[in-house]
Length: 165
Image 1 (cartoon, one colour):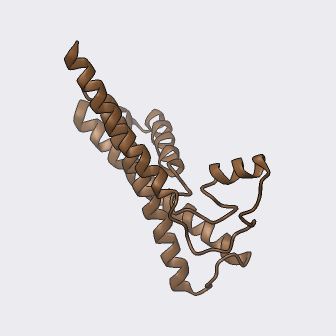
Image 2 (tube, rainbow, N blue to C red):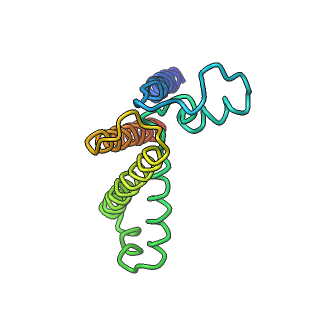
């Protein structure tokens, strides 16, 4: 019984650490002009701002969250019902799950780069970026992508902690 409590305590501490890291990552903002000033007190606008990674008052580097990798997981699951080779990988145990996870991460990376490029293009076209140089746009795409990769890695760590015995 005492061993179970100690194991649970370790899981809670590790999970709390990863969640705090994700929250701190949301505090790192990109150099964009705020769409709204910081004095907004409307609860709905503040709620929208919080679920969009601070898109209204400044853009966080983790603004895409886990969306690209969740979409990649869904794409791979759908492909596994159609493509026989992916279907067979499902039943090959640890080797198959590693291959499927690798494919999911590759597709997630491509989706992340595409989504961050589209987001930066939108911000640039609407005059929200302070600097419209190509190198600045590439830098912001890289920052958003890295922020998404870090959030995904932390979420994978949390799910790994939950699976520990």
